[in-house]
Image 1: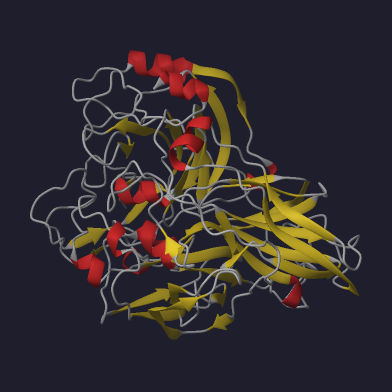
Image 2 (image 1 turned 135 degrees about the horizontal axis):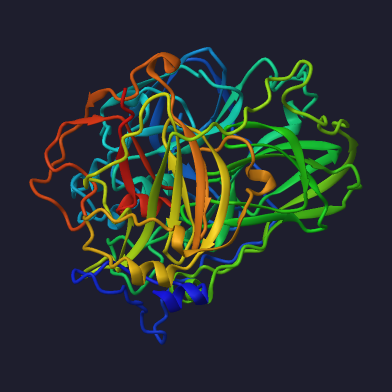
Length: 589
């Protein structure tokens, strides 16, 4: 464990039943561990597709179709929302105006039937291979528990689910995606994801926008996701050869980049400003994004809305589930000139050896047309000024501090490791029970060898700081009990160096927070009251009873309970979320 942390490589560690120190688990390095590569394609030849925009209440299908990801690839079977070839339409709504969405599950057999792991939790069975469950979560939305797309609140082919979104929050870049227990990682890769843009009186998305931001053809989403393909152009999920087919494998990593469903596309751009709603829709891969000419760009918002002031930077990092709202300036790009969106995020050598985590450098290309475009740069302030939304308040004084350990322990059977929160899996107690109307500082203590983007449903937090700590001393002084026993020791005695403030692109409100390895990440969460929300955030609601009669290997779910309550919180490396790195929380009155 400690050697792997020091090396920055891949380690698979789990709390042993004896409570002794964790050990490092490595496969045979002579084995070719990664699946065959995707077919070779010529990059930057296909145009960037822009998803259609829909507004208002409606019924959307959850269905199967076909899509060609690149002109050099064959036509692939896919899933989507609303009849799109792949992914879903961009849903646009206005703050304070509710919309009602009904989703109709019209799927046939699972696109990745052979990758469904029936040992992963109490809900996933062979039936999911032929009649897959789905659940639609509005990520970043302030929604009642029974409308939140809870992981247990699923529906099968032939069934529908009604969601009412009150949109009682400011303008923001949200997204909707599948959240079915034990199937999320598969369903999202199959195509069940889309953008949800919330507008308000200040950020209208029109030419009359009081902030003077790019709109219309100069505003578009960039949903970035790595994928792997078979020779016939179909999507491939299983990528790690040393893990048997049909078993959870830790983290799906592709070797080609899709943006809005197109492999390494190009976008023809006019001279001027473009607003890009950047979403990391990957299962596992993080990105450090910049432009190939190192030109700077403005970050104007992130997960939960606009920043107080734009941040003018030349690179940013984005983890799965995070969104960053940027304005890029192509004024200097003449006709035929080009610049690439590039990625420089590096994984440790162990990640590359075992699961194929190679850096994919060039993601897409912007090619100048020479025509005049949108000329205005972002304003000096985005909040707090005349005809702007109020400035973000300072982080409130905390009523409680809560320690959360992020761990990765070797398993005694497949899968090769288990990721846990406080050494617990989904069905385990105790769970957090914050009080309504209070503020808590959650200290995420990451003793695993990789970053975890942590996502709490319902609430939005402010990153306070991050601070290094000594994981070797922490583990030596706090023997780890068996998985299923609460374990969250205080990290104070093991802190190192000074706390570091959040990055420029992380200021403001966040619903997904990157928690790096070997660091304590402190986040202030203000938990609203029922009166503020207009609904009971701790309500119970019916869900399908789990079909299993007993606990699975590392079960995610109550064994026989047909109700759920409150919300979930989890790692947004969605392979981790599917396995054991998701928990519940109740927001008590």
